[in-house]
Image (cartoon, rainbow, N blue to C red; front, side):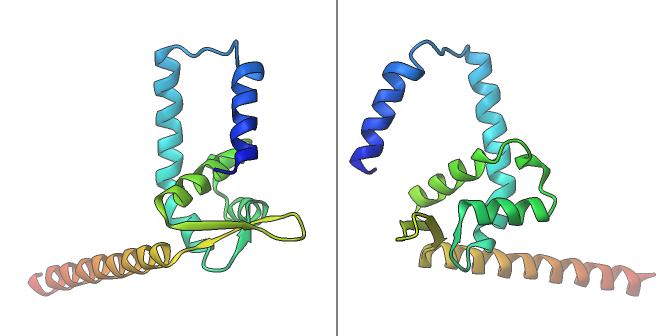
Length: 137
């Protein structure tokens, strides 16, 4: 993490969020909600990042696709992007225009290709089973 961000995080913890406390039940509920959204968005966001995009670009594309889990919760996209970056599937960089761009790494591209192949094989098996059922009748 950039040194400036570390200092900001420390300042926020010491000042802004000093009096914020969550009960364990609230923490679990928040974590479950975040995990659910992450699971649903992972393949979609990674697929959208085959070309570099900003977080704003991703938000607009997800809204256009009718993804309701991000309505009034667009910040979750950035949380998701940072998680995927930490896992090595996404990389980010700042451009001179002041925008932060995200794109897939080779590891992320391989993940997408493997998931698409798995999905294709799954539907191929489904078609095969349907064909067998038709032939048996």
